Length: 162
Image (cartoon, rainbow, N blue to C red; front, side, top):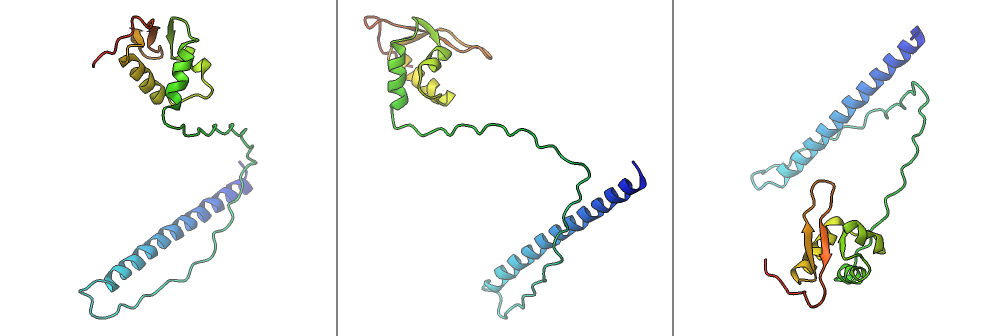
């Protein structure tokens, strides 16, 4: 670091300090204006309260760039999930159940669905189908391993109460 770099960085820090102080002052002025409005509308206030508005201070100076900043590659925008009509996911999962192996997990189902649903929504649908007796839990998932399910044949399917 040479003398010019030192001076430039010092000036930048001082400018940032002034800008920060001005932001705090502007916040305090806003709080005082709000307090004045509350007092002016208060039933206990019999006389009008003069309101003094401070003029804004000088505009904030442009920050000094110390070094060129390389732009990070922009992350791809997350796909916008559309809201499904009622029971659409349920019927889509029921159709996919015809195509999965007898023993399957949610990743097998996700591969067959048109769009990736919220994990909680898929779990809720699978739980409803399990309560109807159309599938059963073979192995409860742990950590990153999902639950494993087994399709029941229509003769085995009996609604369960839980």
